[in-house]
Length: 380
Image (cartoon, rainbow, N blue to C red; front, side, top):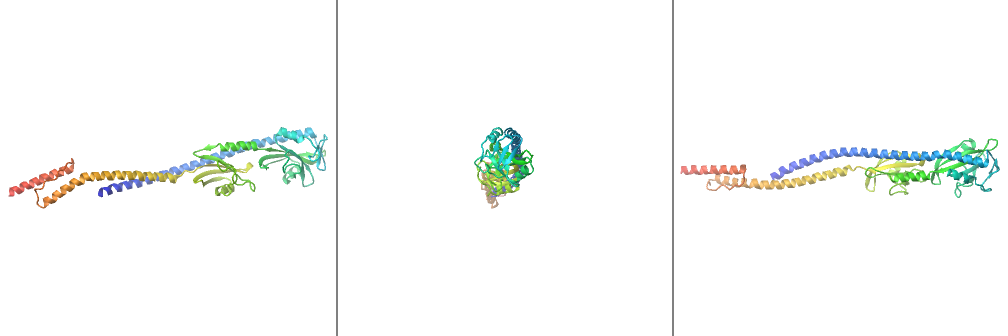
């Protein structure tokens, strides 16, 4: 029992000290790894947003060229001015523009060059203008569509060019408009060109879907178009097209728009850096698995306990074998001492087969007994 205790106490003490040191070191390592993951997601999110900005800037830059080309095409077909005749524009060259009354290829010719939809508005009164010719037929933006107040104020009232980026018919597009004037220099209408960015966005989405980093890092995108598709996953490995507005972490992203968040998804803890891309109303997210320091520490603890138990079992077995080797001879010698103390000098000392101090003790006691027997014989 004593040997077991002597073995057990050091084993437990060593195990506790080893676990404490391992836990401290693992916590420090986990903290460093967590910061590394955060930095990595922030870098990836920033890179992804910059890529979107570059592609959007490229698409937006084309609109200036396109509206210039459209203006030249219009001038070639119409002349330098157009007069208003009710809801019809009558060009200097005699061309009459009103899809409900006349057929012409003006806008189709413009569309073939600028690769975008075109439209022409005519001023109705001091507050409104109506679309009288359009290439995007068959939807709300076709013939009869009334001009937005902001565009009316800019082009009709102020006589200036109008450029606006927005989501039109579910597609991100840049719209650019220029005024049409009569011979007296008064604004009587507006020529508009709309360039979609669907091709650029499709390329961007594909790039995001193919972006992987870290151990399980990925890029995904959540729409933030209020009252239309806020919370919808635009890019996601498994949730693309689904509504995530009821998820707490998505709600936080939509509210804060920029930051770092920690959340659980499918039983796994995630670290994500997110940022708002205003042109598309996107929340771009770089996500990676969290460093599970608790699991690592628990695994280390279990290893220490298992190794400690193995060491303890081996030590106990070794202790028992050692006890048998030591205790048994000592017990024999003790029994012989008791007989001698009772005056029994004729009992033979037990035979000890060890080659250590116990053997020396047994031999010495044999000599003492022999001396006592000799002394007793002399007295007799």
